[in-house]
Length: 392
Length: 146
Image 1 (cartoon, rainbow over the protein chains, first blue to last red):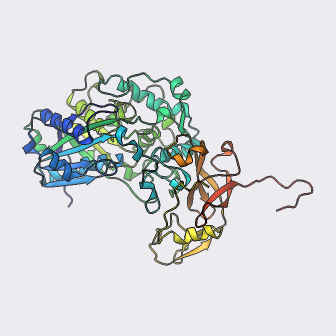
Image 2 (image 1 turned 180 degrees about the horizontal axis):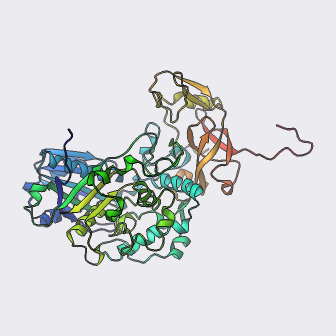
Image 3 (image 1 turned 30 degrees about the vertical axis):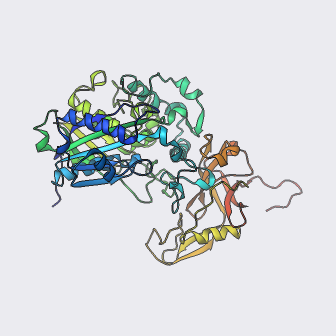
């Protein structure tokens, strides 16, 4: 009989650093600001934190040991991932499992990035990931000059467009919606409205992706504090329950930036519909996709939002480009997406900014961005992992 | 050829692929148990976990399964080539290979474009496979048929 961890862990605090470009602090310096803000938010002290789930590390940052040393912590549980956005969910899931099983009482999930300082490591001669045995993590092929994580998203979107007839102008609805949300967020890096004309006039980065289909290079940090639900109920903030979880999918059917069945890398080309395995997270929460009040996803590149929406059955396969038109994914629409501005417009810290926004929303603290009467919100990525959160 | 462009990293699993390219042959690892070829070259058959792989010559033909044109100068060594294309080819045998299209402008690129391999001796030791469009037009009067 498997352990039932539904609603056994909760987010009890979160803290952010300032977000921006060319910030003067080191990555650890940004993390320190976020950590202190998270402790204050939760009403906890440094001595309470006995677990670390680190979404830092290679290629840009340090590991758990330096974080614990720099902040003077006393840790008995560690989960270490590396900095790629694909590990956001896993870092939070590990924290939930740790507190639900008693391996830790309070886990701090930590991420901090100075992309503006470390940018040559991304997608250029300093990027060694593409040179590992048989290639990089986003489909890189350095021998042919294909580096930069955007490349994988570009190849996927090209094939998706050929298959379904989607256009760049349709894709623009994604960054346009998310920019609108950022304009309601004083902490977001991007401050100017984005129109369809702006999107279409902007330069190509890697076809079919244009400038505004790719997130800007930014700096920032976030810390999220997780405890058991029992402990959460005694703390200062309304607990945000981690209701259900499903993990990263992997295998020949999977490519990090394409839905199964699209036919990138070695994926077979086939029918792409939400399969039972993709909807596990809803079954465990005993809800349907339509019960989700707002959806949050890894949006370093705009096609990934389309793929995630389809993957979790929020719309049918091949329909997302059409489905996101006419404000459907904007606040006030049927399914608001990335309501604090995502990676595309708030900051690139992997998606932790969206996790924090989910917590704000379910606590009722989202102000001008508040989704009314929200009970369930979902974080779900185009590579198949997901967490459903709920108001307690 | 600009020697600052990265070269493939040879490993025990892919060494035969690159040796084939040097001979101007596209070769693929086939599983002797289940018969399937796979890419990228790995240590076992990913379909049946079989240990006995045999490298065989492939047709060299395929279709473009996806493509992109790079406009961002991520690599100083590639800057002079901007905007340059990179493609994925679905080989006739099934596996897909990332490469680029040559002998044609970027404007011909489309999903479904039939292509055939050509070999580029980029250094005395290393040859890269690239692809060119296969012309499907019939021979004109007076030309030999293929």
